[in-house]
Image (cartoon, rainbow, N blue to C red; front, side):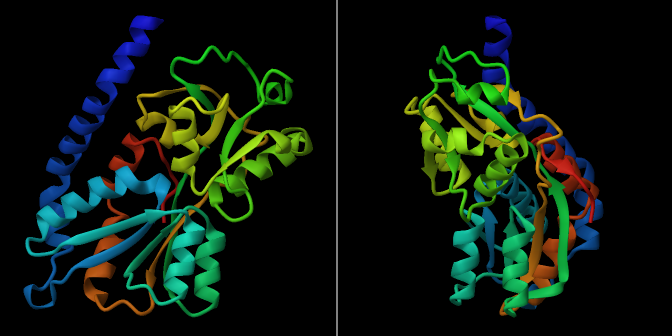
Length: 273
């Protein structure tokens, strides 16, 4: 078991990199021909992405840049709630990649998103993690109510999608009031995971995709399917974009077979458009 864990910890990043490279190479020619950018209109493209999308969006963006020389993509990550508020206040963004539908709909309702560009291609799962060296040994979500567990890291359950989903899952299991006093709140899901990585808490609740990319945590188990909330990522174009053609091209790129393969490699569940 220890040998297997070491193999996964040290070789998983390499496996992901090689798989993504192969996907990029096989899909590069078709994608470049289908989504070319006019040389006259090339500018920087600014993407606001939920923190759980950090690594996968960097990978996809790098491949898109390689196919469109002269285009520079800037990626700003954080909680979907924080990013949505920045867009509402006029922050210069072209694309919003939200970890839930609520914040996308909030911006769309208030006239900040082009509604016809919105789509929901991805899902995820909630898992319980602990530090790689931790001796915490629990088997089910309801074990989180045990007196021996005192500190559980989650994202802000009032506004951050990962935290909102976690609260919904706890409510579905009827244990929200039991675990709430134990919660250590992070401003986004990656911060919640950082608490676990630094061994500052007994365990944490993050997306399966976050746990997969960290070499300092281990997944204890996933929430039962019956308690998993409807996790849906929502993507769309910011209404005040200064780069309409680039934005549309990139959003279409996120629907390609190449993007699907990369999202899947990183552990996301592909739902389609």
